[in-house]
Amino acid sequence: MKISLSCKHEEMRQAIEDEVGRLVSKLQKLLKRYAPDLVQLHGLFEKQPRKGLYAFSLNVSLPTGTLHATGSATDGRLSVRQAFTEMESQLKKHQAKVRKDYEWKRKRARREPAPKEVPVAD
Image (tube, rainbow, N blue to C red; front, side):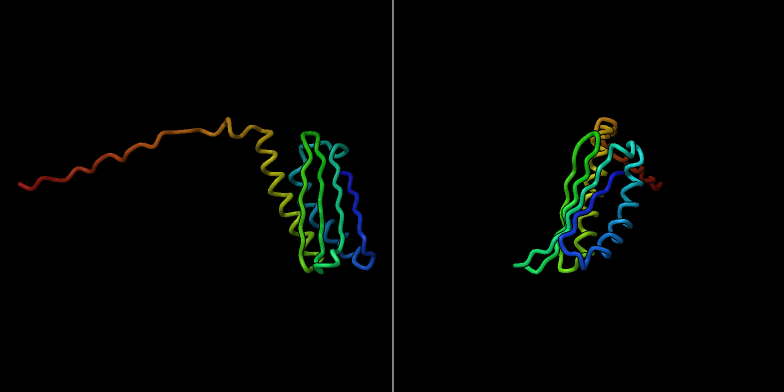
């Protein structure tokens, strides 16, 4: 996987890189079916001055499509975690769609339970 990270605030660069490195290892477990040189991950970390929030946007380019996720929070690491959580759910949904899981899902009719027999007293 090719990873590029842009960080506009140098004082937080090391903390963000550590968090991204830890979370990328979780994503790589989901991406092991793709060739490593075909998967690209780009992250952009910035601070929004008016709101006082940190924003992290994440783009993953796959051979089957491109996924985008964002996270914003008052803490820089929390914004990174939010973006990766959203990316993980999007990635699982995308892979299910590529595998065409919706075609393999069995549709069965619901059966009525058999009526219970009541013993007749003599």
